[in-house]
Amino acid sequence: MDGLDLSRRGMKKWRGAVRRAAGLTLLGSVTLVPAAWAQTASLNGEAYGVFAKIDAQGDAGPVPVVRVSKTPRARLSGRGGTATSQTSGINVSGYIATGRMTVSTRGSIEAVDAQALGSSEVERVNIRDGLITAQRVVAVSGSAANGVSAASNAEGSTIVGLVVNGVPHGDGLPAPNTTIGIPGGVVILNEQAPRGDGVTTTGLSVNMIHVVLSGELTGDIVVGSGSSGVSFSP
Image: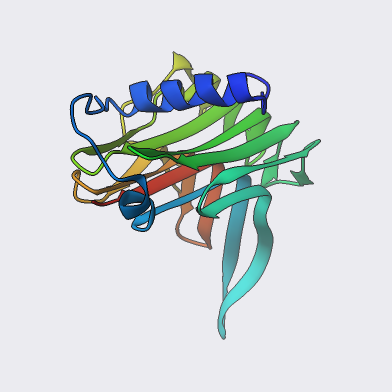
C-alpha cells in the first residue's frame, strides 16, 4: 500500500483513483447546484487490522478466552476528511500474531460527486500457531456516487504468501467469499458484503481473512478489514 499523500495534488490523484475503482462515469453535461447536492451527501468508512472474539464452551455457558478490539482502527463519517492509525503489531499466543499494521480512511464531497475509501495493510500474519499464515494482507474498499449511479469495489485488495492448513495459495485476490474448511471451523477469504441501491447509495465491507471457529472454541478472528459507503442524492 502506498504511503499517504495528504497534499492537494495527492488528494486529486486519490479522488480519480476511487472513481475508477468504483467504475463510476461522472456526468459531463448536466449543470448541478452544489448546495442542493451537498445537503444530501454523506460518507462513512472504517478500516482496522485485527479483531478477535473467542469463547470456550463451559458448563455454565461460553467462557471468554480472547478479546482483541479492532486494532488499529480508523473511522470516517459525515462530511469526509482523512484518518490514519498504525501499530507495530500484536501477539496473542496461540491465536493471532502480526507484524506492522497500517489503516486509513479518506473521503470527500464535491459539487457533483462524493467518494470514500477504507484500507488496511497487515504484515506477517500468523493465525492459530501457523494454521493460517500470510506475508501481507491488504483490504481496500472504495465507493463513489454522483446521484445518478453509485458503485463500490475491492480493487487493490490482495493476500501475499497465503498458506492455509499447510496448503500454499500463492499471491493475489481470492474470489469473493472463498470458504475453506480448517480444523475447528472455516476461513473465509475476501469476504464481501455490499449494500446500497446502486443509484444514490452504495457501500462495501471487505474482510480479507475471516476465521469462524466452532466446536470447543467458538468465535471470530478477522485480519485486514476495510469498508466504505456513500450517499449522494439530488
